[in-house]
Image (cartoon, rainbow, N blue to C red):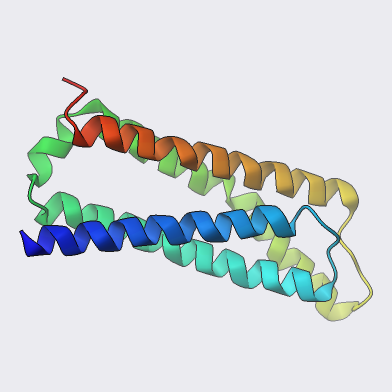
Amino acid sequence: MILDAILAYLHFTAIFILFAFLAVQAILTKGPLDARTIRLIGRTDLWYFGAATAALLTGLLRVGFGAKGADFYFQSWPIYVKIALFVVVGVTSVFPTQAYVRWRRTLDHDPAWVPPAEEQKRVRKLVMAELHLAALIPIFAVIMSRGLWR
């Protein structure tokens, strides 16, 4: 029982951290992008990746070692929606991550460089899409955990 509580706490904490860093990316990509901000976005993206990895791992640990057991989770359709949304968010995050790396590398060669406005706008739209799609995951978690899918 205590293990289940610890795993739940770690899972929720990872999710909160994931949302925090994704929200920071959304805020930073809205404004002007100077060298400091571009480097900060890159670090934020690393933390976001770490939080996503922690959320995934702690979720898997909850399935394997939590009080409800794997049968409870895998017999419900909401778990598959959650997994699909998580994958879609992950795939959506690839372009912004590649852009951040490219921006930093370009900046290393030309300190006066700034990202093209259209690319910054596209990255922000993708980050906002990630944020909104990720916000749907807890809805299906609630449906699943309450057994409302039956």
